Length: 287
Image (cartoon, rainbow, N blue to C red; front, side):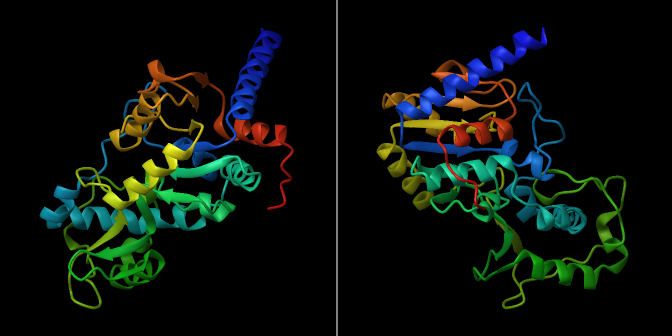
């Protein structure tokens, strides 16, 4: 059985290598599965269902003080996971493929900045970056690490709490009264601070979407890595590629929203698979 499985894995990798060889300008879309090897938990299981309650919505965050207190208390505990995360095999492999001239654009649904840290340069953070905080009133932007110091200063007892890491800098702090948590306002205008990421219920900036679609139109094909595509903001790029006659390949463990649209699906670990793909194109790993 092991021999049969190994042959099947090699066959899938050969199919992906042949796909990339025939389509030298890839539009790459990545998701949470690329960052799990970096210690950042993902949202969904192999069936595409939520592993935990759905993330906070924009409407709840902006409209309810108790929700904001809960969010920032959990973020205080969860931020170190994001701050200390380093690029994994998937990030490094995609940077290598870009260096070899095989990537037209890398569009990531992740907010961790790890593709840029790995060396990818032609990258769009579709949903923003968790390492930046934005004031909803005056548009001031500040480093999330700077806000972490202020959160700790105002809430020293909370800073000592330990919690299990959750996706995107969240942490599992439950059964606690968040009412006493002190959320700092914008240091410039006193307005409401929010992570500079697109929450559920919030729209992706139009210019970001337009730039990504323009890159897709220049590509030969699309490669999706580590995403179930259950969120429409990413899935629509697969729909557009298929509508334009561009084939789509997928590297992902488990069911995805786009399974019926794919020209090729590789159900193998994302990091190892992309590393093997980069190696097939003889790209030196000098990072």
